Length: 441
Image (tube, rainbow, N blue to C red):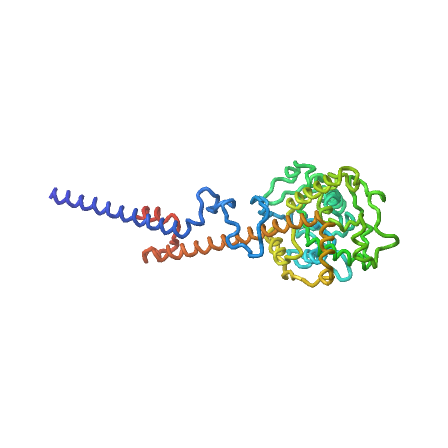
């Protein structure tokens, strides 16, 4: 009898060992399947199981018409902002002449899907764009606040003017401290007092997100000439810099009389004081670095280099910029930068007034020489724009692949379960499948 009991105990031990081996083997197979389908998209050292952005191959299928020219670190390509419309964040649109800014400005006030749409009434040039939770503007642009800092104010003017204008428009913001969701208190945010993009105003602190559009310099120059030829002057622009406007000696006019209507392209190019020359660099640079409009402040060569480098730096630091020649990509990047959606898609208009101007090769080369700084800036901006677009598209494709793998994994894991386990209420195949089996055993 003792031998029978001993033999039964031996068989029990063998059965237990067999079950344990089966559990281990089954668990190993499950983990192998898990790694096979999800492993390539997972990284043990990355939060959330995602590979860090530095490891991404940003250009797996590059555009055949696009050649990468400049190196930009990932931090320059990432533009996913936590724009808080219900907090104190403000989008500031720097509108450069003849870059398609009028069309884009209308998109901002009429075509963005908002909880509280901008109030645009017939016959009025400006719309009222209030935050969903209070009567305070979230957009500083021509069609929302008007030319509050001067006609076509540049970077130098806007960064020194916008905070004060908004403080006067929305005085309640100075008296009401607020905390934006996901941020530290507004007073803590304002510790970097005086830095561009942040405004100290009483107990409230606004964060400004600057945006702009750029255009091919030759097309933009020709478009401005045609506009001036029809009578445009922009002579009411302030050109404020270091607290003052330029003197007539620093910024002489190119014409006599009320406007320059009827001027020829040759006359337009021959004026050495024409602000159309390198306009995009001048409007994006910090003019205080070069003595504003005082051309004798530093040598011409050094002045040009400082302006170009400043414009590049400010462009990189902006929350967003688009290119007139790439309307759909501009829409794509804006939507994913600010997490805002447009109601209607952007249209690419290749037929413009500048496009209808016939000029010879010598004239084009002359325009390029007059706008050499703009040519360099646009080449730089175009490369950065394309890399940001490729980066965003690659991230989206990667997220889609991960989602598809996870769905296939869950489907296969569910099929691999025994039927009685699959029928158990609330039983869902997960990554802790091994611990579930051991606990059940």
